[in-house]
Image (cartoon, rainbow over all chains, first blue to last red; front, top):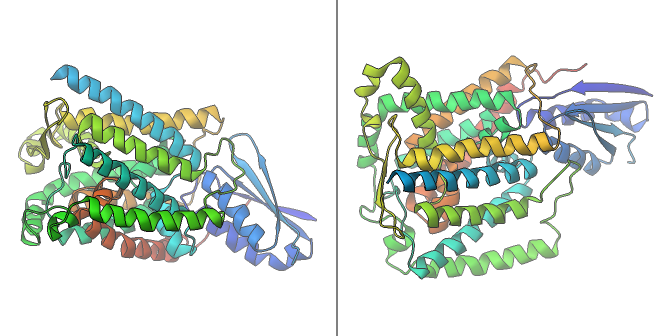
Length: 80
Length: 375
């Protein structure tokens, strides 16, 4: 399984969420097939709430880890 | 007088510090509340704003009933249709900037460089407004309706307690329903998260303390204009001396508890605006920075798409002008005027909704056109 990383730190609200949603949609098939994991690095606290919220609603698994000065949100394997 | 202004300065600094901390912890972004309604069809945070307005409404009315408050508080005037235009531009600006005039402060404090750009934009916009102030003031005068009345109860001639009672009954029903549906708690993975409903209630009490201590709820945008005036005074003193806005005293009232006359304006001198709004600005920035450092989250990022720099400045610039066009920012109107049902704040809100919608469209179709970076 490959991990695609996105460094979206420092961006204006709500671009962080919009970028994440677009990438999740673009990779929806690969995510569901378990081929990729998307890892978003963000310092936007609101996005750390909204991205997992949206991804879970779309049926994906979400893992959030606090890194040095930012958060990593991993989106993987669909359950749909 | 100097001692009382020093005391006011310290009180407002503390209120700002507390606001900065709790807004950072909850990411209590008022711009986002309106934007998400149109962009994501999400109303979770707008509910928190409703709670904040409702609790403020109740507290302000209790204070009025107790007889220790100026009603309506300064500097609110009779409603002018021009305020709708101000609200519209403010709505566009806050979405493009990624935060309102207060959101910009707490985000800047937590290390957002783009919010610093918005901050510069707000000050620049305020200074541009100063150039058109005489013309706009005349327009406001021509479009003022219900002269002599400020609030809806005054306009229709009823006791202010009546609409507050009706709205409290309706809000209680709504809030209880949301409570039963579990809509107040918001799951979050961030460190030190404070549930936004708690911040909403806390901010309402901060507004109350401000109302008691300085005679009016919180506001910050004349403070922004004053900061700009200090810069202009340094660079172009002769031009500033001839600018009408900087000679005007936008605040001039007697504090009901102490009988001290409070006077101040946007000009570059230490007055009541310096004692109220500047410490709030400083406090919110420092409070948020403190909170962010405590969580080890403070860090500056500069490597963002150039369009976002333009968006942040343009949004801030629009907010700076619009806050003056509508004689108050979203904080003054939504957290101050709306709870006592001023016509001005209702007009501001009427402009803010379409403005936020328009701002969201511009953000998606122009700013986000090429997406972000991938590594």
